[in-house]
Image (cartoon, rainbow, N blue to C red; front, side, top):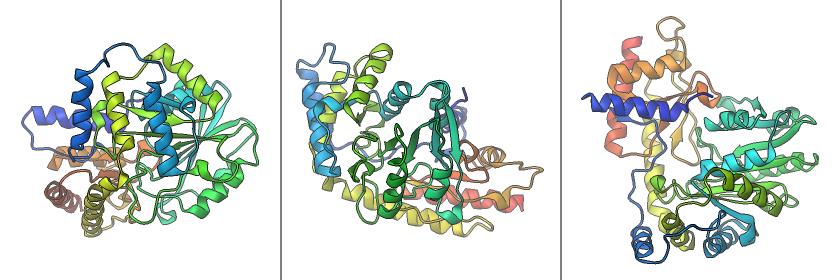
Length: 383
C-alpha cells in the first residue's frame, strides 16, 4: 500500500523545518482558522460531564439525531438517527463503507483527479479501482458519459467528491442529475458522496446527490468536522446511509476502533446544531485566497489553471515545467520546489493527474504570497 502523498509531503516538511529550514507548507488541507469558541466550550463542558465511558459503536444517540437533523436542515437528506454512523474522521467513514460493500472482484469507478486515499482504500478492501480521467480543459470533471462507459457488471460503487479535493471543482445540478440517471440504470450500484467541503462553495449552494429522485437508497453521504469547523485534530466524521449499509459500517467499525472519542462527539453535536451562516467569514477568506493564488499562478510561464468553485485547493497544469530530463514528472517538480525554495506542494500523480501540483491555500495571505514568489523564482531558474 502506498503512503499518502499529502501526508508524505507534510512529513518531509516537518523534518526539514526541524532541521532549521524555512519551509512554507501548502501540502495539507488544514484550515488555519481557529475552531469556533462554542466548539471549545462544548469540549470543556463535556470534560466536566459524564462523557468518559465507552459509547455505542455508531455514536451517542442524541449526537446521531443531531446529525440527522443537520442533514435534513442543510442538505434536504432524510436520514434517521439509526442511519447515521459516527467515526474517527471522514477517512474512517469512507473506509467503513468500502469495507462493507467491496470485496475481491468488485470494481469501484473513481473520477480523476481524486483524493489520494480513494484508490488505496479500494485496494485494501480487495476491490479494483477503475480510474476515469479528465483534463484541465474539462474543469477537472470527467464527462458523465465517460463515467458511464467505465461501468461494468462488476461495478459496485462510484466515489464522488464535490467540491473536489484536489481540484476544487463542483458538479453542477445538471451534471449531478445526469450522473443519477446513469446510476439508476444499474441495480446494486451505489455512490459514496464525499461532502466534507459542502460549506466551502463560493457561488450558489451545495447540492447533495442523495436528494435527487430515486437516489436516497443509492447514496452514502460522508461528512465531518475537519474542514468547515477547523477541527482537523479532533478526528470526527460521519455518514448518512441506507439502514443496511449503516448497520454494515457499524459492524466493520466495531472490529477496528469501536466508538469515536466521546468528547469529540459532544463537540460534533454543538457544531452540527450551529447556524451554518457562521461560516460565511471563513468562506470569504478562502475565496480571497483562491483569487490570490490563481493570479500568482497565471504569472508563471506555461502554468495553467481553472478557477475552483469550492474547497481550498488549486490544481494547475504544470507540464510546461517538466522537461523529461532534470524534471521527469510532477514528483520531481514537487521535490525540486521543496529543496530549492522550501515550498511544499503535493505532486499530481497521486491524484490521478500527472503533470499537475496541488496547492492548498488554507493558510494566510502573507504565506501564500511568499510561497508563490518562491515558486515563480524556482521555475524561472529551471527555464
